[in-house]
Length: 247
Image (cartoon, rainbow, N blue to C red; front, side, top):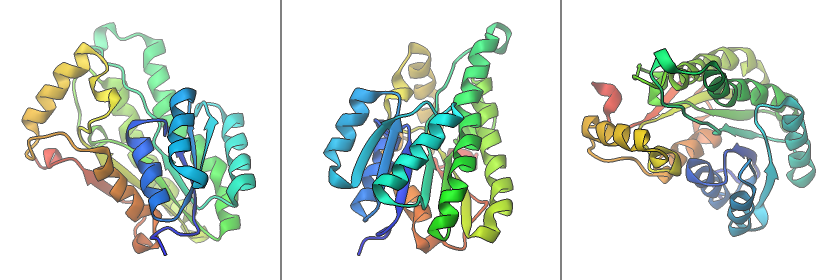
């Protein structure tokens, strides 16, 4: 028996990077997983590589009707949802003075509003499952400020607070809600632009561990939170950052 045998999970932003690692780790330990993303070719390829326990759906996480479709199709394929990993996220690098409102709102929609929609959309299904675990991927940027990523920092602080509020509200239904706070993790998003490459070098220099993390190192924490091993943990922050938040 795997650590999450019998559980049904939805993982957003799962085509590559951390989301793909979360899905893979959950499947390795016995879960059935619906992977969602807007990167359809990569998402389909990732799901195919994970075998019969995986499916893929196109999913704009900022749209409530698409959330409802994802939950419905997950139930049809695997049964009631018992794990949600709100992993989808984007970043925009810009000084505040020149940041465009549309860019700010886009980051908030993808990183924060999607978490609200995801939590709202799975509650009924998790009640049918007898309970569940919602795992919201925040960031160390949800613990302390950083320059030139105002929208990202705002969204990740919000995810941290939303997780605590939801944990209180959903505890009577045996639904746990926790936030995970990765530091710098080696994914396509961390080296996508010259600006992010520069900030990556600074981040590594400031990290006591002296290196970026790997997606599997975050996925192992997600696995713990998805499993019944963490059944008394809710409303908490789980930090995976190589020590940078200690300073």
